[in-house]
Amino acid sequence: MILIHACCAPCVSPILDELNDYHVFWYNPNIHPYREYLRRLDTLKKLRDEKGFELIIDHEYDIQKWLEKVIVLNKKNDVLRCRFCYADRLEKTARYAKEHGYDSFTSSLLYSPYQKHELIKEIGESLSKKFDINFYYRDFRDLYPKGDEIAKRYGLYRQGYCGCIFSEFDRYGGRDNENKD
Ligand code: SF4
Image 1 (cartoon, rainbow, N blue to C red):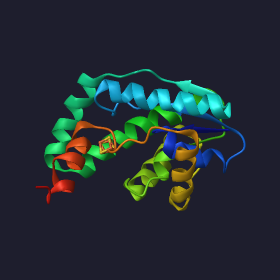
Image 2: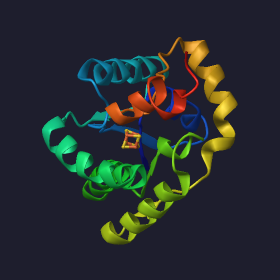
Image 3: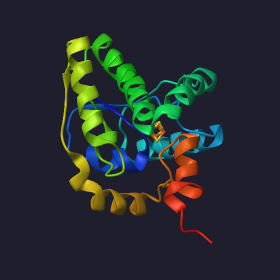
């Protein structure tokens, strides 16, 4: 049985069609603001209701702790910021998987071409050793067109930025939008 960390419904949906024996795990304190967090969680619940999988929700959302840590790292560079963010979420997943008797863990973060794929892989493999549990690695990025189609079919909300306020600024006001009028 695999425990799949879901960063959001559109990213996890095509992965579910590839695997047989799994539960889905939600832990994403990196999503800001809080109403966006709730919207993405509600979208995952909608997918759960459509497809009928087991969804485990970790509601921890300590925005104070998360921002204190990430603001310091972000001053240095965004790779350090994302390293912390991936490791935080994957560690929660690996720990839960180990403590609850799963064979493996993985993450829908491996699906998005916009994520730092090699970094996620490296962190997953390191946590696999730390918790003595298999990290199910696959490059799911080839499923990207299929994910689009599933999101449209189920009417899933698709967000425009990764999650944190830094990524929201990069997308709508910062370096990803340098040529705006
Ligand atoms: S850009 Fe995404 S992965 Fe990186 S810190 Fe922000 S929410 Fe986390």
